[in-house]
Length: 636
Image (cartoon, rainbow, N blue to C red; front, side, top):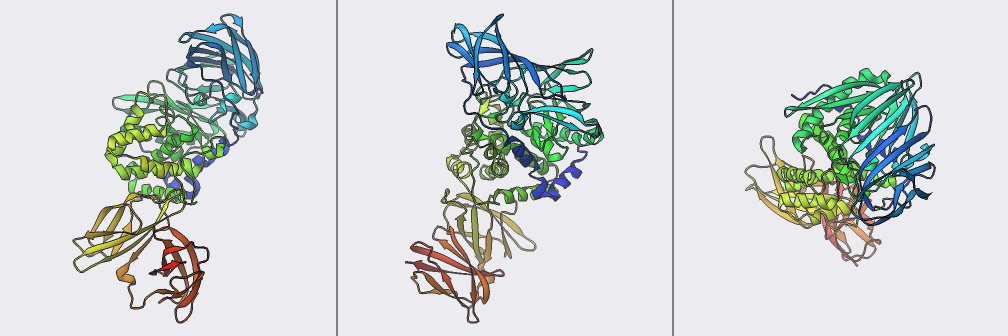
């Protein structure tokens, strides 16, 4: 049975402050991650890391780390040297290789160890790096702070996207996951440490505490983590399909009562995601949370770090364990495969658990945020700009809405089948995936070629604006003409099936029309007389500033004319509207090219400059308080 304790409380808070609360996740994460500078170069990918044993001594009162990282690797080619990403702020004491020291260089954040002889391709070998130092906490990755009235210390790592090298020697590219890791942490005995995987040993020794964590799933370097504080610990259990998963939570003692209630909502979320996308990917180990002092959360594999306790944050970070941890974006250009999916899955919790009350407000807020600016692609065109990688509007909100719109395009059955096949594709499951991988599986499940869609909505910028002019004759045949303009020149036209909802006080119907060109007219026979046309009432289409005009309502004996026609720089309007009105000019493809305000006199006459328009044919519309009239003219 799904436990649903505080869903109403948390989701109500999230929806009632939609524009403020809804994007706290993305805003908090992007503000933190923007401190992390991209590396100028990265360690060469010349081997497959199959196992790393990470041994660290740390005290959360002191900004210092010392450790030994033992790496087992399989050579991909004959090797004379091995490289790691590691900040030059940290000091490498030595590198042990079969009991002997290796010579090495450490410059430009690259640690380069030289083997005594060339290693042949395809062999397994190992080495250990001993290092220590004071991490630079100003650049991200390694963090210290205090909490509570007693100013208890807390230390945590947060490495995405480029911060792992700031605290440990690793290979932080997105093409080689470590097959398994052990994390061994020694810290003063009155603190608890938490890391990836299962806690298999937790011993106190005089004034120290030894904790050993074992993780036996492939993991990207940026998801390796630890956190240390005077944590209180409590556990929830998620039952499903005859099995259970333990959710182990590490929180500040002063917040433990509140956290124990709030975090219980993860139970229902995990059960939902299990139903929709398969078993939690690390069910044989654990899931959990560790409280830290930062906004948002971080989906460190099997242990999410959180800066607060609220419903949508829990859903977002849990969702990452399917989309981000099990299947990880292959480049930071594809970060929407992590963040867009996680954002959308948090919305799916509303759709499945409170569809009437919260789903549509959530969708409306996401659509409004996505279209709040006229430009921007989901594709990250500059991965050296961390703020651009984690842009809340594009990577999170628009990414989620592109996925949602894809559901409308290909249908629920094909969408869910394609997404599940993507997650379970053996070439990318527990590995890395690109946008092309997702496109392939959605094409296979739907039988559709989706290149045009990803061209418009992944690479393209902006969104469409629609104008619908409709009328109905005495035989109840509806005629609808659809005009489209685009907010950005990168997409000349957004081709999409559109949902049109006709209704009166008793009857209604939803019609799907395939919109392929601006100015397209659809003739639709109905079995009732409609009094209204609503566009996209279920909020599937990414669009904004749409206008629906009933020709029957606005038809008047007065006409709207413009002269001279053709015109050069100045157009005179003769309108049935008096006073201040809005004037919109569209090209013959339906693209909005000019918006102006005009004041017509008592005779309905006004003038409008068109000197910025290029020569060509145009549609002109004049609007005031729900009344709209159209005409055409030629600009010479």
